[in-house]
Image 1 (spheres, one colour):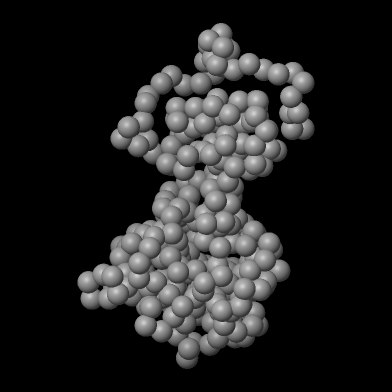
Image 2: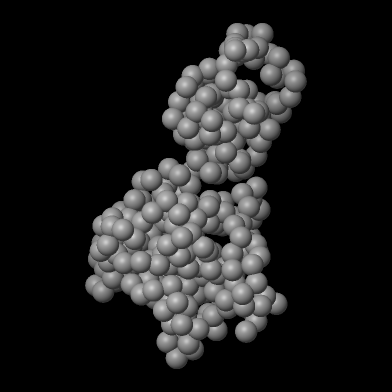
Length: 288
């Protein structure tokens, strides 16, 4: 079966051309194309819906390959972290009823009420996938509260990373009470920050991100914590972290309060050194 020229079983980069660009790479995926999808029309993607399959990996594939079931998702993530793509991200998969056109659906193989569903392998794969999706589609990296019952006509209407149970609280609870939302949000932001230099997660690399690095300069911090100024993930705030921010300076979409300062370069860095804002410690444990 073919979809967009991709054969079932091919291992490729995720396909679907997002409207924006991103430095965060799409993860490697296996393709098994579902016939169950449709057009998004003019609807803009602003959400990702997280599901649990409630059946096995193979059972999920079988369900999504059957046209009579009229159900699908863009991605399926196995317990070992293997990512399967079944619908092109430019297309509308059939996973969350009225929320389909605006969202990308990710099915996590497992069970909403089983805490053992979640492990380092599937959560790491999920965060890699989310880092690409939220930057490519400009989806807010937040987990909004409430559910459909809180909105007119029982229709959930908030963008971000959304639980299936929020969209359909009358008959769904997934991904369930054991899904580690905050860890997933923090881990996804850390991946994005390490690549883009956007430490504070506002979509723009500027003075606020620089101040995070300078405010923690030469400090040992929790590895990979962007808000501690460690996009390099080595647990130490130093020259690599500074270079990550300066290398992406003034990229992204500036917030209304952004301060416009000159492009970074040798003179800018020299100025920081001259002002005493950066004190290089040659004995510091730089990452190699």
